[in-house]
Length: 399
Picture 1 (cartoon, rainbow, N blue to C red):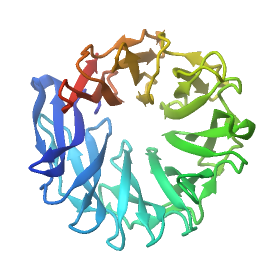
Picture 2 (spheres, rainbow, N blue to C red):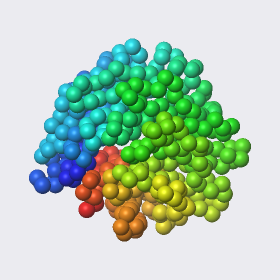
Picture 3 (tube, rainbow, N blue to C red):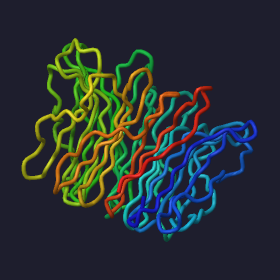
Picture 4 (cartoon, helix red, strand yellow):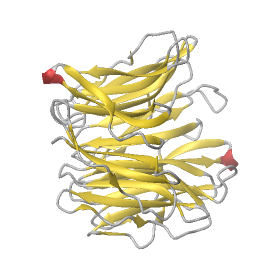
């Protein structure tokens, strides 16, 4: 979403027997949702699209798609408008080996960072590429030396100065672990020579997320404690001035089970961290939504529970604008099906009330995403099954 409330949602959809990337633009001053359709020829299967748009309306869409034999990463510039303006479809990854799982972030100047995993012929390693408005795509860069381990779930963030952070997890065996969490930074027009392991512990580490503000970055991840009997949320902060990460800090209590964190920052360096957590001890079988807030002056706050119903919840999605307004959405068991719940945080008014964003009992809803514009408006999207199991994309707008 840009600063005026214009938005873009993207997904993959079967198109004549081949999965294609689709998109639909939202323009509040022009009647709301505009026309939709594929944004690339559905010649070969395409999956896992991701999109980012800055407050000025400059954006980037990325996805993975086969070229007929091997998956590649593609990018397409985008500019908000009544129906939006799409640029050309560009190959972002190298053509040497298969590439998957792209993630994109873009700053206020229109500079973007795309990250993905790409095979070295035996294992998948983490790669990234920078895009700027003047020179276009930079050179794809492998962020880690081939280690004999598998890297997965890369995530990217970029600040307005053009510094970028990519975090990911890797393991020698994806089925058995142990997993470790790594980070690499782009600063001064170059990626770090070697990535940084964010916590060299004896436990499993995974599910990383990263956000950037004007003073640096915050990375978060899940880590096992007590010989693997509990999962906890850890964080570490990076500052451009020192080009260094702080020692990890545990945010969640050791008496609860915690997992799947997500973090966002505003223009003052304040941050919001949300995750799944049991409330009531390690033996509690259902997860709730937990949160902690960070300020540069006071550090991390205590843990706050955000949901109000004792039922299973899914992975929370989080977005925050530069002024500190945030929206969180999650999947929650509502009777016999999963529904989508949203919650608003405003710096002046504090926390709102969890709100059911849809009420259909025909089928469960999945994979919610959320964005927040500079004007404070927000948009949530998800997909939902009907009585026949057919999936459709739905949305709800906050204003």
